[in-house]
Figure 1 (cartoon, chains in turn orange, brown):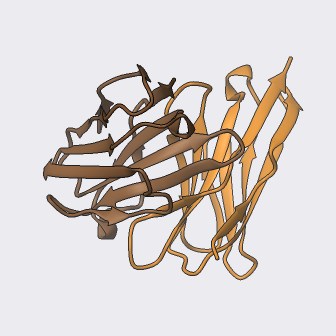
Figure 2 (tube, rainbow over the protein chains, first blue to last red):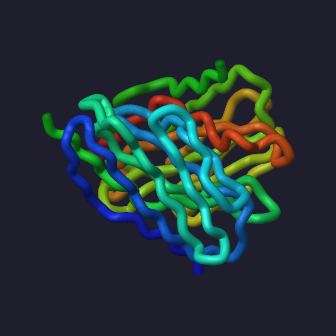
Length: 110
Length: 115
């Protein structure tokens, strides 16, 4: 079956660093995506990994290990506006469907 | 920027009504998708389409149908709305599979309440 796991909720302090983990078991793999979704809004694209390793984009980085079925999203220098849900999604092989985890709700406190 | 527009932000419908949710994208994307999002369940795929007049069932197609008569428009139809279809509905589009390094672009969502 298809399974993507991520923690339901996390909290952190403004200025800190937080790591959101995602583990997946899918029948195929053709890339892993992270999306940010503020309450009541549409998800927006954050990062894409298809090869093992770290992809850095400003304050956000994403890591992938295909052999372990594992990814994480690293958020540095947290800001209040980073309070949102973070969705991990895996693209299946052979088509363009994304399979989503249930999302991690991050709350940043001053 | 790609824009995906969903016709309604909020809808309230009665049980048994036929409901149409419209989605239009303006960047000539081949692929379009309908998801519903519920607390604790994440995004679940209802239907998707890779081309005009083509449709494929997702994970939870029961009670829904779709229509794609033009490339830019993908409609979700609730044949007879029921209260368990109260949810946030998200439309998304993407380039062809070969160009899909950015995944989906989502619409703003339609929050449907069936009473």
